[in-house]
Length: 136
Image: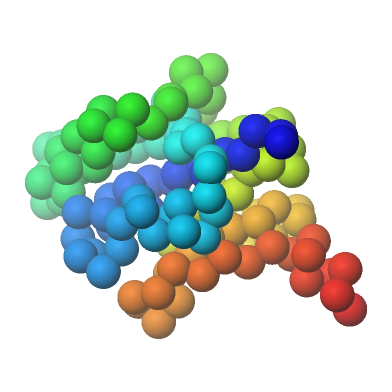
């Protein structure tokens, strides 16, 4: 079986500390046997919140990255959204991106990259544009 990856963006990692209705286990239910990964730019974006109003969410997000041994791709340290797009394309068909950022979600789906997002503020949903297009 090909390697499977769940690429985590800033909006999801920050939301983990705020929304008790979602967890990393939910991701594995939607996309089993995958490795959790993110980019250096996402970590930098979260660290940028350490001095602001969302500092406690940022601290918890960084603790989650460490506790769950989430792999950080160090070479991706430019713009978080652009790096997420680039990494997910490079990881290929085994990659799905988790984002609560509507604009990023639409860009990913337009590129044929599967996305896990939050519907109605409480339920994680997996959307695979390639699978959907094959069913047409």
